[in-house]
Image 1 (tube, rainbow, N blue to C red):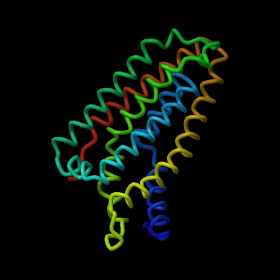
Image 2 (image 1 turned 90 degrees about the vertical axis):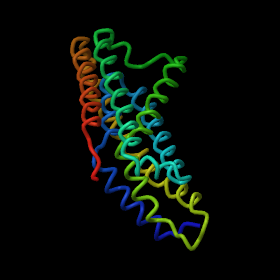
Image 3 (image 1 turned 60 degrees about the vertical axis):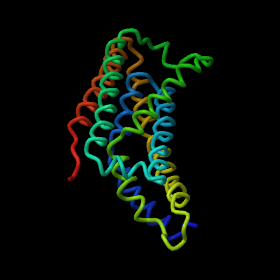
Image 4 (image 1 turned 90 degrees about the horizontal axis):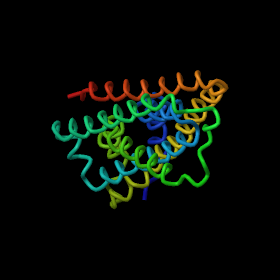
Length: 214
């Protein structure tokens, strides 16, 4: 099984990478500004599920294909970028439909939550930062002599996911708190919703323009 020193070393490496805001963090912030706390937290959950899908893919060899093939990497990256732009455009188009009374979504609106989680999963799976990190860094911390390499990677993968749960939640709550302040005025709420949409569009363009080190 994975030794404690390897877990701690990987946790330190993960923390260094996670504290630098990447596409997932900026996506959570954009969704929080555009739609509020409930959507932000559902987005965090989806992002983390998507990130762990990357861990599983790397553990069973698929991540190496994405990282080694420039064509596959670009395809995955552009799919995520296009989807981010689409979500940003949708948020901007519907910015005037937001009202201060609509900050808390109805308790029974489960389909909306599910769709938000699915959005987060897709963005998490196509996150270039996550692909590179898990494909290039994660395998370096497994103990080949101990065997069961896929299981070791899946256990280690829980470390950055747990750290991300804490940090992304804090980002989402902070951004949604700022949105709540703006919500005292419908006009200001519309403006911050539009800002969230622009943030996601800008993020999509940035992801599309981001190249690989090779």
